[in-house]
Amino acid sequence: MNISPRLNAFLRDMEFPATKDDLVREAERDGLSLKDQAVIRDLPAHNFNARWEIRYLVEGRAELVGAASAA
Image 1 (cartoon, rainbow, N blue to C red):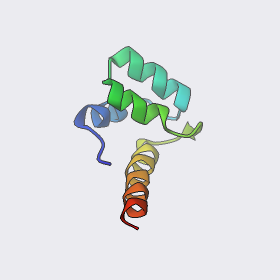
Image 2: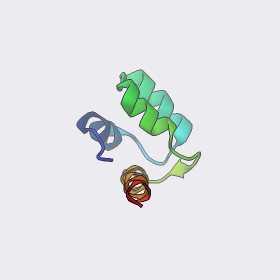
Image 3: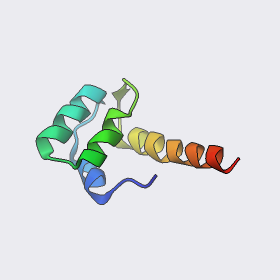
């Protein structure tokens, strides 16, 4: 899954480290779309040190789902 431009901008502006709860709260406050908020809510409960960790999880998870569907 590619991260939407709005979610990418949100992550760029987010201060790290941040917990999943921090991300959810700020996403709601910033008015991210429900789809982008769902991406954040699907993240594991974790203390994220950098935005690349989130991008890796989101984009990597999509590749795994796609590979499983193709099998």
